[in-house]
Image 1 (cartoon, one colour):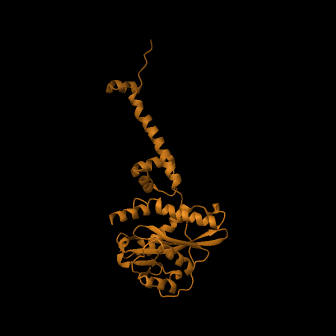
Image 2 (cartoon, one colour):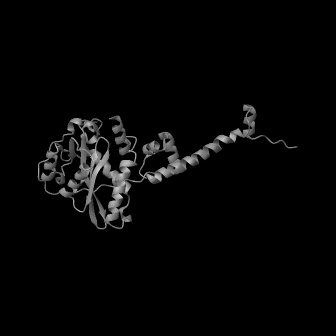
Length: 282
């Protein structure tokens, strides 16, 4: 009779004195768990297509190591970011004020401010920052102005229009004032839309310090620079909207998602959730 050599699993089960079936369990179980994890990750990624490893890990409650491994297995890649267009300007009515936030800035390299800043102290300034961007839609430019609370990273006010003028930015700040107490500082770049008698008078009446970044220094308004990249990414292709009304609704839903659902990496939660924790502390 021909003697059949035992396979490696039979051999090792005899040497280690364990059941041969146990040698099959771990790979099968791991594969099954990986498939469940892939499904879970894809579900989160479908809802949040611009999430990288860090935000996916926070959302899923996993380590970044596991998240990266499962994301690679799933073949998931974060959607590419869109480029921001430059904006034109109108005539300024008032002189740009000094940068009231400069004393809160810690540069990574004082000799090269464009290399970045540490914003940790700036969040205690009580400041809001404002800016606007534009979106090309149905053969025309649509402008979106927003106001962001530095402390919570929450969008506290916004407006949309077909002209980038003082009215556009004024509506955004009035929207913010209608919902939240006024800030200590209201900061922007030196866009002429923000250098108006109307805004200056409003802030004087409310005892708000107007502040502007230095000319040609967009990194000094970095909070808003990053937000608009996020806004356009999360809004997605605007050609899916049938008219301005649908675009307006899409922008409103995107800002709501940013405020209430999307995890902010620095906060480890959404801006609204972080604001709620501050209220509980106080």
